[in-house]
Image (tube, rainbow, N blue to C red; front, side, top):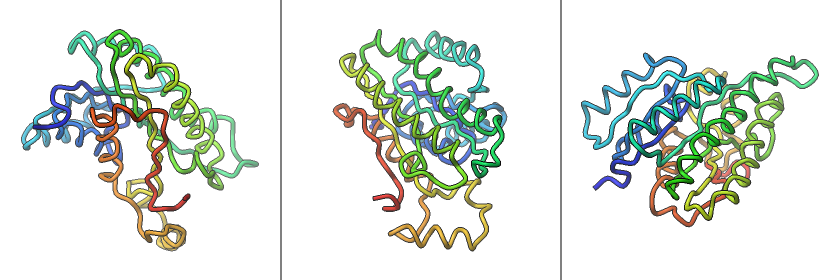
Length: 249
């Protein structure tokens, strides 16, 4: 029997990469997954694959701009009304606007903070109200090793992900007595659309820094999220699980 049968999940940034695999993995475990992205069309293929496959759960495409607070509140209310519960929230949506500090424009910094950090606050606040009433829930935030160790040219991105880590720990302490866990997963270099366009020389350089000498796969992040969403992780909260092949150990 699937471990997340009939659980209701919200996953942001679900149209590609890590978010897509998280949505797929939760559905394969039996969850009803509201997969969110700016365009609902980008999610229809995944929803069809899950429907036509062996999954016991389902993927429900949902168009959502995580920089729009009103849209977030409306989505959370809609999911709660339709399903009468929200069991799992995965805050995955994120962007990069890389640049060296001295050349970075204000909007490069502000856009990254708005998408990567402020949206996590808005979504977690909205969902936690429902979880507190139910006295149970799983909140999982996708951070990054950049938020743990920093990265040149990513002062904005690293700041946003470090903020997610601090936010995660604070929320975990606030909601623990209500039966809710809040954890973060910090991926290292993962093979996604963003990393695939890097020049081979750059990829080779980064691989030399990774003790396991390879980039990770999106599925490897999804498996960790599935564990944190499960009943088996009921005593795990306030943690940052780094999945990076040993890069920052």
